[in-house]
Image (cartoon, rainbow, N blue to C red; front, side):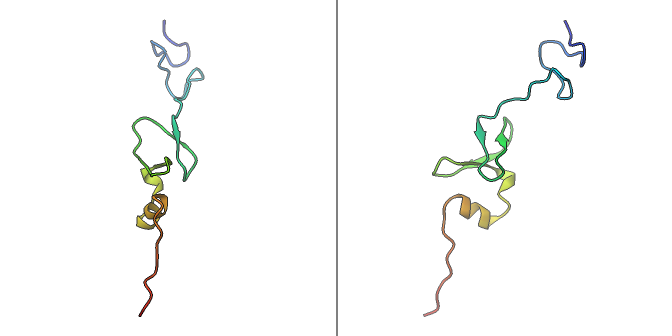
Length: 76
């Protein structure tokens, strides 16, 4: 039998359907605090934290997420 709202058969409702149940994320991004869902690219650091690849804007963000310290070389 099909859904009375989105006419889908088999329990997979359209995302606009009132019967739609959003997927659950197994991990959360430590930068934006949103869930990381199937099909999304992510990275994980040595502390077990996860982040969307899109949330890491550039090299400085990536180094910070991975736990590296950015230093300034002192002149001798």
